[in-house]
Length: 210
Image (tube, rainbow, N blue to C red; front, side, top):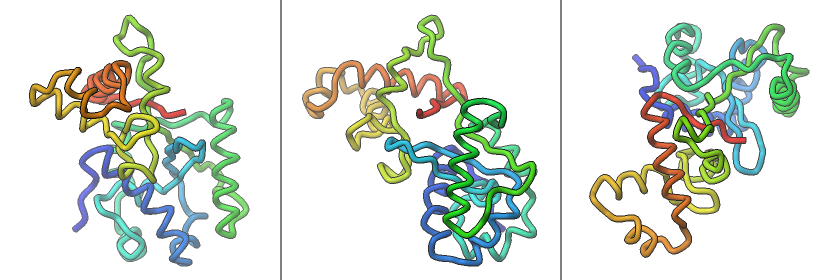
């Protein structure tokens, strides 16, 4: 029996995998019109990537498992865990309109006129960006999530250095100056952004990449 995803990394991996699987498996594409809840992340090139809740909500999902097991899987279980990292975007907002247009284009590319009536779209929760809450606005500009880079893990913009790499080095006592010496393409602001991102993620909140 498949288990629900245990963390955001697994969910992001599944979103990336869905983009590949839906192009290869026509039967998977046919089910798009039945989806009630879509989950989306935005890559660094500005492209929105979408996947259904039942696909991204189960660990290590793929087209075969989804096609065979989806009818018996409980959407309430996936929705409950995905709620830790994602939030529904109201359709009557600017972001909602952008997402609806992007989802419609995505579905049209697979032979559908658009999403089913009443379908909702969820995106990553925002992290507070005010200085008094410890998160500089520049973090948005330095941390990226892209399904095609670092396996969808948060990383420093323009590099393949993951936020987790920096946090692990610091946890093992490596100094900031040593990190900058080993990674000369990083700067002090990158390290501070990684620390801020890690602190926010530990509080079950993540950056909305935009």
